[in-house]
Amino acid sequence: MKISRDHERTPEETPREPTDDAAVIETSGLTKAYGRVAALKSLDLRVEKNSIFGFLGPNGAGKTTTMKILLGLSRATSGSGAVFGKDIATEDFEIRRRVGYLAQDPRYYGHMTARETLRFAARFFYSGPEKAIESRVEESLALVGLSDRADRRIRGFSGGERQRLGLAQAQINAPELLILDEPAASLDPMGRRDVLEIMERLRDERNTTIFYSTHILDDVQRVSDSVAILQNGRLLAHAPIHELLSTDGSGAAVYEIHIGSSPEEALEAARNRIRSQNWISALEETPGPGGEKTWLVKTTDEAAAEENLLRLALEEKSIKILGFGRKRQSLEEAFFDLIEGGGDET
Amino acid sequence: MKHKESATEQATGRSSEEHSPLEPAEGSLNGFRNLLGKENGEWTSGFSLIAHGAIWMLIVAIISVVIAFIRGQMEPGYSPRDINDAGLLMFFVLGTVASVIAVVAGTQGAIIGEKQLGTAAWVLSKPASRRAFVLAKLAVHFRWLLTVSLAFPATAFYVLMTAISTLPPPPLAFLGGFGILALGLLFYLSLSLFLGTVFESRGPLAGCVFGFMVAGFMIANYAPEVTAAFPWLFFQSGFYLVSQQTIPLYGLVSIPATALWSVLFIILAMRRFERAEL
View 1 (cartoon, rainbow over the protein chains, first blue to last red):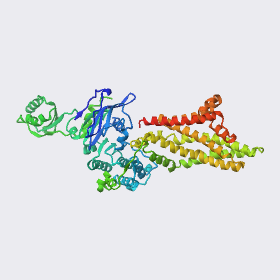
View 2: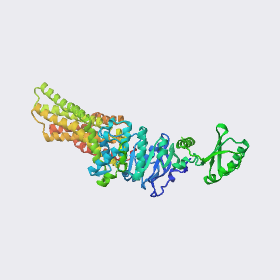
View 3: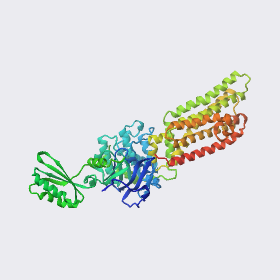
View 4: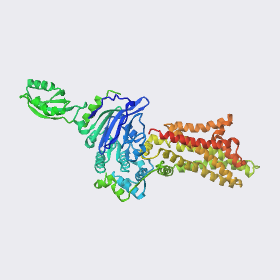
């Protein structure tokens, strides 16, 4: 896992490496400044083909800015990027042919119906035949459950209906890459579940790569293959989700040892023995009920910990070990660890 | 969301592609026709077309004709040609002012509104040409503004004036005068679209377009030679063309100059919008 605490590279030192086949999105030193305000600071990102990539961060972190730069709607101040190996600065038109995009607060033309909106979107990609376009429109309406409201003007649509329409228009061109900016916002729990299911189906059945931002961490944990966490325009973490959840905010693996009521001398000896290992970076003890204790042991060498950590603890015969295992944190814990740990920069 | 059972085909869109392959849209102005349809739809779907039509018919045609009628009643010595001249002067003055007001009312939000709402970002996240986005607005707004603020009122005015004075104004010259007003409308429209790529809110745009017209009327009194470069005295050129079959020298210069300014504003609008952050 890559944990980025600070990017020291200057914008001038950001040549783009060639993109290989497996990366759909690749950025190098991508930077965006609005006057003196840096919205994005030297972002290095890589999104693998056929994956669901969760892009997380508080409001104002730079997520939407990144998406707009990838689509050519905004220009990077420095750095570079490629989508499908095509340069985002010079080949954005070609990129948009193969991408679907759902904006954070999608707005469409109020005088159009849902059907007309999808037809309008489809005609940017296809010149005909009309029957095939209409067929695609019908399928898209059915996909998001808007068939019964297809001929209603969208001026009167609720936020959730607009969001569904947004998903339908984003996939109207059967895109290889879907960029979704908070796709589950303004949806009720069932709508959210349906959106996540559609995202998984698109990945599994059409091999679509999905790059999406959200604040709903449970959703990310449920469907994402990889995540990146951004704060104040700075990349804090970028890793497959299983790696992110099995390490703490600094990238160290964490093991948990549950100990029953045991003599203090034995515990002290075990603590000292564990702490003396050069692959142990920290040991924190949390008291539990009935004299139980939990040790959280951070290690820089997972293999050594897997092999030796329990053994070291058991060397004290009078210690009662109730449980041992690698600590799996929730995404919420990982997110707050990273955000609060990296929140000193403004 | 319904119909999840037929997930594969619906989600992948395979069924339609297998049975009837879609042809990719191509071209350097990709999306132009699509955007034309959208802009036309915006004009025709609401009340704006009817509202514009009624207002400009009343102001440009009816008021001009009524004034000519009253002048004819008040001055028994007026010939049919004098009555025509009284009506024509009002028509060209009101037509000039109407076209500027109509441009501001109809297009101040054409680009700025779409930038603020996010619809421009949505459209341009598709493979749509930014030049097509601007040109479609120019073409459709020109079409409808010309129709409602000048063409319909001009037709009504011509018919009513002929009925009142019993002498039809020379049709070709009247058509020429109409063409001059139409060029003036194009100038203010292209200026408005260009300013839409410069400003982020509507107020400065409206102020600049109105201010340009008002300033022109004032400048004409103090530095008349400057008016040759802009459409400020187009109402005089149109009036003289119809009533005297001649255009003053400043008018002969201002017509090509205005055409050039219009082209320049359109090019500048496209260039600025090409680089706009959405």
